Structure formats: structure tokens, C-alpha cells
Image (cartoon, rainbow, N blue to C red):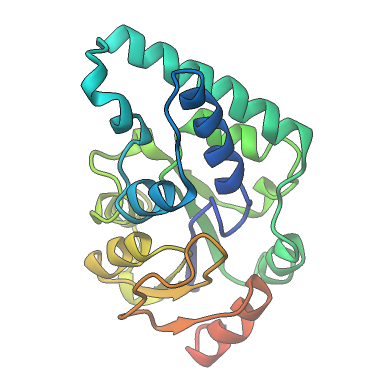
Amino acid sequence: MPCTLLWDNDGVLVLTEDRYFQACRETLAELGVELTRSFFIDHSLLKGLSVFDLVADRGFGKEKLAELKRKRDRRFAELIDANPCTVDGAEDVLRSLYGRLRMGVVTGALRRHFDRSHARSGLLKYFDFVVAREDYERGKPHPDSYRTALQRFGLNPDECVVVEDTGRGLQAARAAGLRCLVIPHDLTRGQDFGGAHEVLRSIRDVPEAIRRLGLL
């Protein structure tokens, strides 16, 4: 069986994280709460926790929190629709690899957010499968997402390579017994990428990294 390349989505294929930060910041600002970039990076990107923890002491019930998240989601969708967010070079790389190995997406995003981010990307035709947040129990850095992909699609870990952009994504891949390439960006640069097979400068470096592994 040929190598399977497992791609993270946000920050790797599409640049959604800045837009997500903006949507969260605007939603919280309406409550008089400031969401700083540093808190977002540490709490959301690094730890995988909810920025709405900032209002945990407000006594909001589940319905109020759900309403805030719906408002955040609507603003996020508007920001995605207004500005294409595909990573530069992503389609060129996917096109060059298509048919030479199997490719799937393993994302921490909810399916509706994933679908919105790819509404105009033109990238989905290159993937054999997508594993979204609804498909597994615990989010990254737990290995559930990657283990789900391995089990559901009958993949051999030794024949798979992950492409991630965050330390917790790397931890999830490694905990599932997978090799991981990391492509840091402005929001994740400086995180701990110890254990990565290789840290790359851009998505355009992925094919050569796969060749160095002897899988292409």
C-alpha cells in the first residue's frame, strides 16, 4: 500500500486561525471582555481550550454560552467568506502528490467549520477522506483523532506521515505512533516541536520531506 499523508487543516491547508481569533475577540468584546492574542495562542492553540473560559465566572448557563458560540460562528463564517484563506502553494503541492499516495485530513475543526473553510478552496478533491471533530472523543493533544483515522481506514502507522502546525497536533500524532512533519506559522512559531521528524519552512517543502523518508 502506498504512503498515506494525513493533513491537519487549520494553519496547514487554510489560514483560518487569525479569523477565528478575530471572531472570538469581537464576540467577547460585546461583553466587555478583552481577548488578547497571547491568551488565544496559549489557551486555544497551545492547550486546545475554549476562549469562553474568560466568562466562566459570569454565571452563564449552557444556553447563553451556546448563543455566544453561535454568534462567534456566524462572524467566523463572514470573515472566511470575505477573504480566501487557502495557504499559498497548498493546491500546487496537493496536485503534485495526488495519485501518488493516499491523502486524508484529520482536523480538530467541527465539520461545519471545516466545510466553510473549504467552500472556495478547491482542495477537497485531492483527499480520500476527512476525519472531523465529531468523529472522535478527545481533541488533540490526545491521539483519538489519528487513531480514528488509522482504525477507520485500515492504515498502517509505519506507512503514514502527519503534517501539523501546532505542538499539540504533534503530540497527538506522536501518541498515535505516527511520524510528523511540522510547518509553524506566526501563531505557532516558538511552540515546542520536540519529537517532530522534521520542521519545515512551508507547505512547498512537504514533497521533498516525504522523499527523504523514502515514501515517495
